[in-house]
Length: 97
Image 1: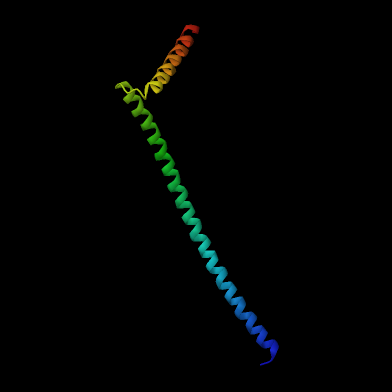
Image 2 (image 1 turned 180 degrees about the horizontal axis):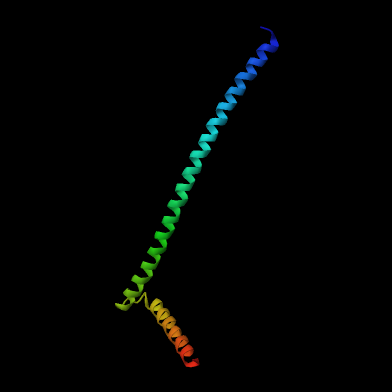
């Protein structure tokens, strides 16, 4: 075998190896995309749960302040002020009719 034939064989082997790596990378990328989709879905679910827990926590703080807790006084005052503002707004709308 002459030198150029050996070089061609080496090139062919290297090309086959590169193609195999390319194929492996393609499948790896596909798997990673699926994992990303699953993690994004899981993240969205966790964000939703977190928001629900925040709402529940606010409700519990309000209920706790109604039961006489001092730490929730400002929260309850703010809620009462918001309700008063809303009632005033509704009364204004009714009086303009």
